[in-house]
Structure formats: C-alpha cells, structure tokens
Length: 281
Image 1 (cartoon, rainbow, N blue to C red):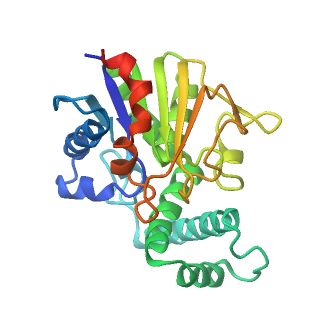
Image 2: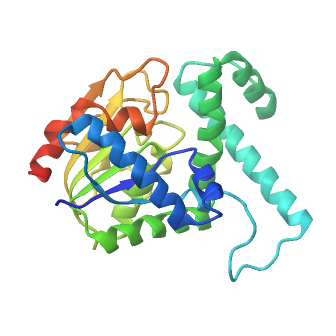
C-alpha cells in the first residue's frame, strides 16, 4: 500500500494534553480520525491510509520546559508570553486586512484586535483565536520553527511516503521542511486550506524567501496539488498558482459555509479522489 504521511494544522494542542503530554499519543489519535475522514472521500473498504500524522503542535506552545532546558523564572515566562501576545496581535491584524477588515483603523494593536474579534461572527472569531497565536509562534520564534520542522522531517524520513498531505499551518511547515531538507522526496504534495500565499502574514516570511514575488515548489516534490475552499478564511488567496511556480493543479471547492477549514471537510472532499487514486491502485 502506498505510504501517506499527514501534517496537521492549527488548534491541535488539545490532542497532546489529552494524550498525557505525549506527542506519539496525539499523532496516533489524529491518524485514526484522518483515516476515517479520507475514507469518506475514497469510499470502498475502510482501511488505514496514513502511515502517520506528523505532530508538531506541542512545539508551538510554552508549556513546562522540556528535557535539557533550564527552568524559567516567573519574570522570563511573563516576558515570553507578552512577546508572543504582541506577535499574535500583529498576525491577527495583518490577517484581517487580507479580509478587507480594518484597513483604515489605526492605534494600539490590542485595541484593534479587540475590535476585530467583537466584529467577527462566532466561528470566525474562534478560528482567529487559534490561528493567530500558532502562526505567530511558528513564524517569529526560530527555535519553535526549527523544532516543528524537525518533527515533520523525522516522520517523513521514517516512512518515506509517496504522498504528503498537509493541512492549514501544516502546509507551511511541510513546505519549509521540504526545502530545508533536500534529502526528503515525495511524489505528490497535497496542500489543504493553505495560507502559504497569505500576504503580510505568511508569504513574505517563508524560508526560502520568495524571489521576485514568487515562491517555488520544493525540489523534492514530484507533483503539487492545492485544494482550497473558496470561502476559507485561512486560505487567502485560495489559489496558489499566482504566488508559486510548480503548482500542478488547483482544486477550488465549496465545502461548507460554516465548517470551512477543518481537516474533516477537506479530507472528505471528492476533489482528492482523482489525485490520490493512482497511488492507491
């Protein structure tokens, strides 16, 4: 059977906590769900599709220091939290401007982001509260960024998958990991609900940096397919071909006007079938 590795998106820290602070336990729980979701798209006999879902969310959160890390003072912990709060507020403000909200609002970030969350509908506000801190943690903290990439690279090296399916922020981590580790090769990269092209939030901060306003498909990727809901407020713009060379196919879909970004909806989308079917025969 073709090996498929997944890379999860935002808001998955709860899996780590529910598994007793075990990244392996979190990954195992996610794999069960992702297999079920993908089966909805592919049909036929239920079976395991994913070798593993690469889990990195715990690296983006300031829990207790890990093994080998010196204990933090209360002052240092408070300083770290304040720095990350400012970074998250900036991400939230820049994300909102991609939606056309608050272009002319000036003043303190905290006031602006408070105004913004009050203005958004409940589901969008809930999404924003997950999206902004985790994107900020990944893009502004070099140590967290490197640990997340190492986690994903380790899973890819372990399984040597032909297919890599990356959702949401996971598409950013996967993209940078594949560039950072040229030994990693996959026949097919599928990005789902990807914010890779989001200006002033993600795109300009990518490593390697885009050249002349264009990113590029990682060298180790044979084929790149991007799938995005046209109303997904994480995938702005939904199409990536105007921002990246080497996107072989774009599938712009209409999943659910309420449930617009979840892995469940994306993995259960029929648009995946023609791209995955050749690898599952």
